[in-house]
Amino acid sequence: MKQEFHREFNTLSSKAAAVEITRLALRGKSEIEKLRQQVQNVE
Image (cartoon, rainbow, N blue to C red; front, top):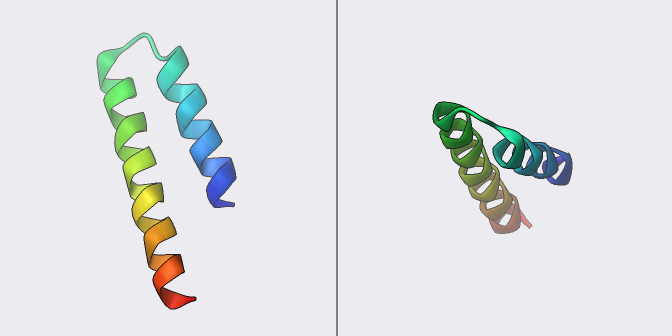
């Protein structure tokens, strides 16, 4: 699921015409990375 979100944020950020949408997509990618790190800590 994490990979799917990451792909979607990548697609969104690369295709977005508005700067704010790109900014939000990058923030989403950052949050996904935090989630990945938390999952690794649990394992």
